[in-house]
Image (cartoon, rainbow, N blue to C red; front, top):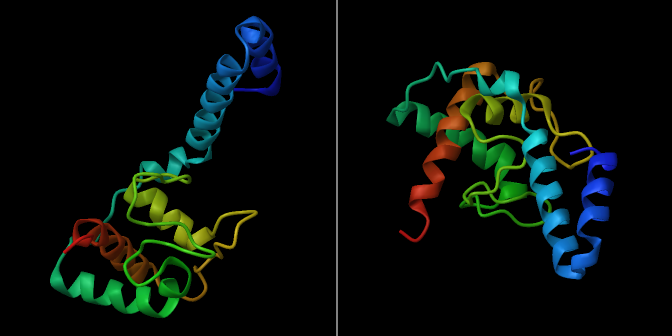
Length: 138
């Protein structure tokens, strides 16, 4: 939603008070989160099947490169967000997760890892990150 569209909607609901303004702001925020995803990356399919070997390789990379920011279990902390909740600001497909790892995220602390982690290990890492969510509470 553009600023002009948001302003127009705001003008229409202005008479309804603060509650309506909050609904509009929330909708705009959701639209902005959805727009942050990478539609081209979303089309990319993970070529690496989930296996014990892939998960072990992914865990090795995670512990070395991701754990300091995203915590041992992927629950996040300062500075990295949770990798086990339902909020994925930059896309939630395997291809989008791969792209975030490889390219980083502008204006965040998420660095590009394409020069430090091989493509194969990045796919292993995607598989490992996916495996973290079911482990919560076990």
